[in-house]
Length: 382
Image (cartoon, rainbow, N blue to C red; front, side, top):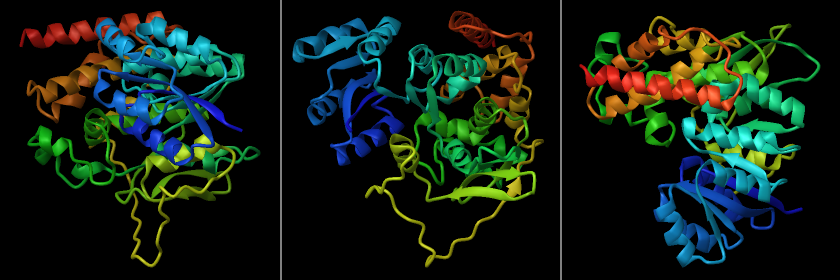
């Protein structure tokens, strides 16, 4: 049966890989809606390749007007009202949310306000910012959420319903700086921070991987997705074992594959079936495959320690973590702060926040905006 599909963030890395799967499996999915924000350069080709698209979310009214003239049979929408219109029009479509940053939170929550929805969530910030609220919506509205992240997909595959988990082992490549000393980290510049050894990713997540903030966010994701604080981060440079689950008998189940987000997307697009995809390549054991593991040093990667502080219902601290990181990453890219200062300043601004539970989108957005202003003001005076 053909499945209707909405892709928020279709012009980004995850969105583009999802489109590859749809293109190579035209009898399985009907793409109805995409959002592209400012990356409208790819939209013409997208609309030509997928003539089933009937609605498009763009960044502003100017783009909306221009595209509406060029494509009179397609509805172009903007803003939060545009997301509402899309989700009201296609109430049963599967939703892939691959929007980066805080901007992805609203469509996540509005998707889960529907009933019997399936949400493929690549916006990890949603769980960092509003994990408890998301779990409440999942339970009350009988929705499904599948995490589009190699580590969380691996954990999902390793879980056994009848056996309680003792520990979740979350792997991290360590990025290109795993072997550098703390002194050497003070010399890192933008070009070095944007080059990941194993994954092809966007600019923001590549820098977050370099600081280990991305892995810190994944710790918070694990907490909300799998309901445990027993999370150990293990450095695994090869990115072949994507994560593992240890049970009470000390057996460990792990998932292995070549590093590929198409693997994750393909798995959840067809879940619970496993479907062959010519875009995927197998592990070749004729090659010399060596897997190494080392427990992450929390004194070296302070971002991980900050994440463990956020494993509770007082999500104001996690909001501060996320918002500070977004702003400080921009300051680093603008040459205003050094690479090694990103996490130090995150801790500085987190320490200013009173722990409290934020229970709706408006409360989360208000704190996000407040912290953002404080950071901008702080650095404008330096």
